[in-house]
Length: 410
Ligand code: HSE
Image (cartoon, rainbow, N blue to C red; front, side, top):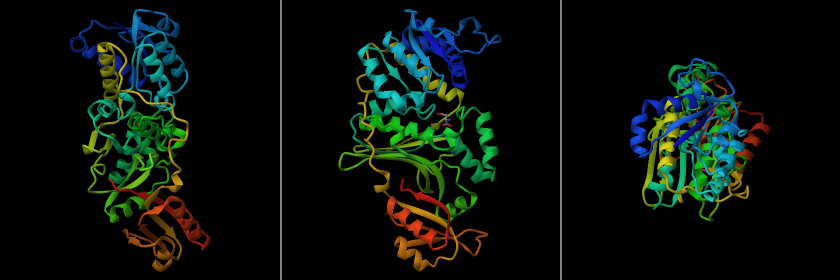
């Protein structure tokens, strides 16, 4: 069984490393003789012990009938999508760590794989080394999944942890995450929340059976979070985390959002720090199940890709349970109609009574060094659009809204 690895960046080089480190074991576990025949990358790697395997021309992979499994670890949508599609159409199974690809084209690629009786696996696309895709469609198959909420981006969790624990600046923490190989090539995808958005889209599509596309999901990142907000979260009794979440609604619809949230110290997600991810899955039979582990980095992610290679080698046909339908772009309900509790931080004179008139019951928060003209509070449950309207009235009355973060109940 010959394998091609497309991409030799952080994850791709990890895949080759893990593959040969566990070579004998992998052959035993798959029950197949297998080897990597090609490594596709436009760059030269003259020092690599595998230099004779490097190629620059994708058509060599596409047209080599000996290659039956292709690992796509290039990232990005193009040319990854075109290559993956071509491989599936040639009857090769494809495994990938590419969340952008799966979030945008998952339903289509799964259908093409089924039509050619091969597999399209993507365990590494969510949660790095954490097994989550297989547990969702195999181990939790007897459940209706009602909700998924998770810390899905290692880079932002690493940055928030460094800011909270070591008062490190945002820029220094991001630089460190990049050096450790956690961040995306364009780290704005991490800090602006798009990476977490792609991952919650994949999980929601799998859990709810219909493709949830990233453009349907309201997404906010962590760039506006300040140490003051962190201090108020502590006074409230929790921490700030970037949370991707999706919920099945009673009317059959789906709500989904990515945003920072106050998470109570008592929550299992509150203690998920550094590059770790934590994913809470709420099943109707199991109740809450939490998956925890390293969510980014070369070897954890590569280990998930290589495990997919082994599963693809063992498979005798397409997986029946790993599938979902195409969406119509309107699977997710209007986020402004969803509800949440909110934290606000204001500058300017606002009496508690005035706040209650606008927001209903509020709980005032405090921090060390709180300036006299700074007010912070949390509200009860409010519709997004009502909270936004109340904040607008505050602005109109001369208050500056310095921070606004959802208060989540996980
Ligand atoms: N940039 C991603 C993260 C890599 O930080 O989680 C893993 O998907």
